Structure formats: C-alpha cells, structure tokens
Image (cartoon, rainbow, N blue to C red; front, side, top):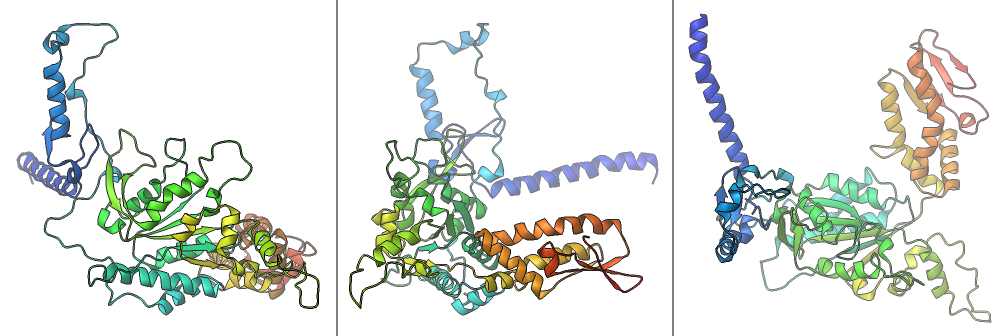
Length: 480
C-alpha cells in the first residue's frame, strides 16, 4: 500500500471505529435508567427525564420548581451575570457534568417483559443435593446443613409459586447460633458459591439507628442490590446473611441512648417481614448525591447468625431452676460439661440475652451449630475440597516440592487448636507459625524434593523430614 492510499483510507477506518464505539457506549447506557441530577430519583420513579447539555438529566418536577423559583423572584439574573461580586460565583450549567458511576445506576426494566423467578422450579436442586454439595466443603454440622438446605429449597419454591393460587406461603427466615469458629459464615459463603442467585453477606456491627453515624438499616438491602448488578427484580428474590446479629442485642445497665441495640432490632422488623423500602444505590446511607430506588423485601430470605457469647450460662440457669432436694432432683452442675447445651436454646433464653420478642417472632427457624472437637478439627485440616493442608501443598507444589503430614502431626495441630478455643480459625494460625521457616528456606535450595511434617516438629522437640531429589534419602534436621 502506498503512502497516499494509506492516508486516504485511514480517516475512513477511524470514522468507522469511532461510530462503532459510540454505538456500543450508547447500548451500554441504554441498559441503565437515567437519574435526575437534582433529586437523584430514577426514571422509573420520577417519570421521563429532560436531557440537558453535558449529559445532565432533570425530571419535570425539578425543572418546574426551578422555573417557578426564577419567575417568582425579584432578582434580575441577566444583570447578575455581568456583575463581578467578590466571593460570589454564578452557577453555570455548562460547568456541571453528571458523572454517576455505573455501580450507582439502576438497570432499566424491559417493556412488556413478564416477571420470571430466578430459579426454575423444575431445575431447582432438592435439599439432599444442596446438602451433598455443602458436605464437600463443610465438615460436620449435619443438622445445620439440613436446615439451611430445606429453607433455601422452600424459599425458591415459594418465589416460583407466588402467583399460582390463593394460598400464600409465609417466609422462613432463619437464626443460626453457634460458637466462634464453628462455620456459620463459611456455611453461607459456600452456599453462595453453589447457588447462582444474588446473595449478600453483611454484618450487624456497624448498623445504627437512622440519623446517627454508622450504616443505616437499609444498607443491608443495598448490598444485595449491588450483588444483583443493580437489577431490582433479581434483588427482590435474593438471600441476605446478616452476621454478628448478637451485637445488636439490647444493652443492659446503660444510661446512654442505645442507638446500635434495641432500636436497630425495631428498625429491622419491616425488612424481615416484607415491605417497600427506599434503598440507596451504591452507598451505605441516604444523601443528596446518591440515587434511591424502591425494593420490596417480601421475597427476600434473611439468614441471621451470631455466636451469642454467655448464652450457655442463661440456658443453664433456666434448666437448673427446677433443682430441688431429693432423689429425683437435677444436680446444680449437671450441665456444666454439656457440650450440646446450645441445642437446648429456647426463645425465653434469647429474650433474656437481649433480643426483643417482635424480632425473634420474624425468625421462625432457629438452629444451632455444635462446637468442634479434636476429631472434627483433624477432618477440617485434610478432608474438604479447599482444606488448609491442600492449600499449603499447592503452594509448595509450585516450587516442585511435595508436602506431607503424619497422622501424629495432624493430631498435635488439633490439640493446640482446642487449647486456643477459637474453633477452626485457630488451625490457620498454628500452621502459619510452624510453616514460616519452611516456606522461607525451601526456595533457597533446589535440591529439596519433599518435606514431611512430624509430630515432634509441632511439639518443638524435633524437625521435619527433608528428602533430597538427588540422593533420594531422608535426613532429619532441627529446622527447615
């Protein structure tokens, strides 16, 4: 191609690219609703928008109010534009450019499209299949896995049959109770990976009463809307997991206003039962610069979870109230060493803990997770699909080194974790501690082919077994 031909052809190619790019951008923008620059309401709420220069949209109400304010005033705006007043800047529409990120834009509803359930009732996995998928990642907690599988299955059957007949199925919100490190959050995170539905995981620690510093109660639903890619219809059929729910219990013996306790529980009543609420899009609280949309929470499944520390003491107190003198009386210390004490929880115990009756009434399904024993900790180390040991074995495999653990080493790790009393979280901390030197030294020596962690190394009485590639023999050292 000659230089002249290239010069003649290039502008045309650039024009085509520019036109194609503009068309693609226009298509992307058409997926989202326009938002009023003044009141921040979306097009579905405020009505058709008036397009102004610099990509600014204003609803008819705000435009009319602006005209009314200008016509009723006594100021001559044409003279003000020519005046140079120190400290006063004249408002210029040309300087305003609407820059709303897409995470704060609401997806537009297609005209004439019928509302469809996210999950087809014919393709909905049965509870035993959901539980079988959870079994691959979560060790133990059979009752909890069964309860959450049935609740999710019934939730999407309820959504699918919402308009089939006159019988309205009530929502089955859940409350999970279990000691720290027993797998409450992990169970829901695993469920989020298995189900192709919008699921938001949030916590109640930052929630406060409306008007105070902290997250508004509506921010819980706002996170679900973000998980549904700002599609309101998808978000209205999603699942919300609220962790650390015990942190909003009613505070005892306090003279200050309880802005993050009982008042938050009262504010969440309308969410749990189902109502239309205004939700900020892409933010935690309502303000003048954030668009708002309305979401109905009637078909949103709420799962609440918390450790509820000292709840076991409240349960023991209730169970030993009937203690009396005689052969048939319960002993005072009968429940002191009972590891399944949480499974005997009653609504009365949760009320004494600080949860209000109206809140508990909207969480009909209450189940507990059992504390982890030594045998379960060993299983957690090696059996799940993404077990901790498998993660370290993969890390060393990238350096072409094989990592093994003896059965004695696994038991020693589990015993140390039991002493820390923080559940499965302790396992990671212990392994990080003794793997530090090994992960530091192995990249130095290319001759190392295998490392075997022994019980003596965990107990600080020996070292790991190192196998060299060339010699093919084992040698025991005091460290890696």
